[in-house]
Amino acid sequence: MKRVVFLFFVLCIFAFCEIKFDYGFDLRLRQEYIGNIFAPAPPAGYEDDNYFRLKASLWGRWDINKNNTIFIKFSGEPRFYVEKNGFLSRGRSRSDDEFIFENLYFEFKKIGGSNLDLKIGRQDFLMQYGEGFVIMEGTPGDGSRTFYFDALKATYHFNDKNLVDFIFLYSPKEDYMPIINNNHKKLRNSDERGIILYGKLNPLKNLSLEPYYIYKHQEEYQPNPFVTIPELDFHTIGIRKVYKFDPWKLRGEIAYQWGKYEDGNDKSAFGGYVFLTRSFKEAKFSPSFEIGYSYLSGDKSSTAKDEGWDPVFARWPWWSELMLYYYFYDGEIAKWTNLNGWRTSLNLVLSKDTTLSLYYNYLRANEPNLGPGKERGHVPELILRHKFTDFLSSHLWVEYFIPGNYYPDTHRNSLFVRWELLFKF
Image (cartoon, rainbow, N blue to C red; front, side):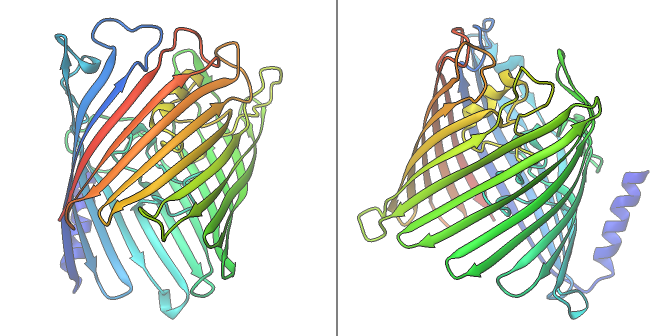
């Protein structure tokens, strides 16, 4: 009954407003292959994970006037698993065949003629806050199917170049909105609440600053049957800086975390990164070269305090698709922590529609955990992107992971391959 009332309310808003209507349809086809993730050697038929992902989205935007908008997006992404040697990948033929509200928000700009904007409802923060170091992914449990947050965001514009966002969000473990073919998918480890205060400032022409404060509350949960994480309240304060001095660009971020678990143990952690980029715009293929370093503190086994960095709202492939899965052995998939790593990259513009990015990552841990040492390993990556038309684009993504002595000897070299076709209408 609640779902019927909810849908009736939404339809009434559309029916009684004089609105300008726009709509679109997106179709994304991916095949993903992940080899040798499991260690030690898995049983027959489970050596690799190989599947197709077909995401279909229908969206509509209603502009009540130039300042007030309603946006809705309905999506589904079933997975179809590939058979190998008589066995289905993960022992399944299909999964995740539910259809959900990916977005549903109301946006009000310049409320009452002021400098205040308000956005209420299910919305994405995809690459809106820095590079996704602490704010990026609201639904890590469904992979890259969705990224949304259920939030209220108020934005105050000091002027055209300086603003501050205030965000309140509440995220239950499972989706509470109407779902077709509900699989009761767990979108995150536990019910979560958060408050974010995020500034975007430009004090100088070539300098941008993004100071922030984040409070997060998470309920008790079990990342695996053998570990229980107590209820936690913690705070994160940090700042991101970007300085451009053509043809160079220097960017970095630093943050500190503190808090307390329900069992009385304290949390205190530190993280950050710095990258230097050099562009050669006039050279053939307009190459750009980048080198960077990242540090995320690790939990020390010798103390009761938790010194491990927490990615807050950023459990996504920040450094690597493969490394995201390897964090399962540290406790939780995509919970970036206990890391110091170097990255170099080369980006080439092969044509106006084609780009090639090459990466090499050397990763270490700050605290030993699984094996005898601190070397996580080496991860070379290749990403090739091509745009066929204004409506059709594609990419090929390849990673290869060579594990170091941070992991036991049973771990093997692993491979990730993904190709994608994206149609937007």
